[in-house]
Image (tube, rainbow, N blue to C red; front, side, top):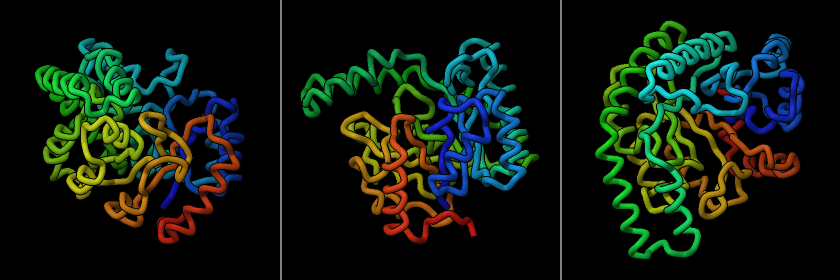
Length: 312
């Protein structure tokens, strides 16, 4: 089943119903309600939902955005923060989001689990620049990656423990509401969890049917492009835990959230690891044009007729 994220047109609308109408005109039936949404759009969304204009595949934390955060910042509050107030705010906003997910009969809630406090400008961004300049195999680039991984591994345990503790509490409420928790793969190696940590996390919750893995095609491809993992191999490892994913393309090496089929991703190979009926959500940048999306959607239906709009 394919769905479409509101992150594409959220900033262009002040009314939730108008935002939904624009998405459904593209040809999508299912919508993922994404982060960055102001509470002012909720009445329009509820009106559109009650009128049967869309079905909600899932919700992306935090939804709506915290009222004190004036920009789209899904990581404004982290479960891993060293500030107790931030951790509490993250939990409170997540519980509120779960309630709204249940209201819209969402099947899942996508979660960011936090980060290790390392400066991305010094690490992920710096290595990306090296790769972009053609220094993929350069000794300096390789040394920088090794140093980065060692630094993160040394710092990570306390932040991983905080993420697990938060997820255990969230999972209790998720079970009560019947909403799956989809822990998302992230684009920066500073983020929590890393791939190694993701496997540990999934194993930790192996007896809990309400926790699973959410694969972001673009995020993982960015790490693939930096030589931090192999996209195919990673999917083989994590496939038993997959709930669904965000799909978007990547222009080398690090320009993501592009329209599918416009970049470097091999969807036919990657999608073999996904259950046919699981949600695949188009999560696109606001810069992507309507005409491009409509054309790509036609290609999608021709290439993947079994992965259409229905969940039946």
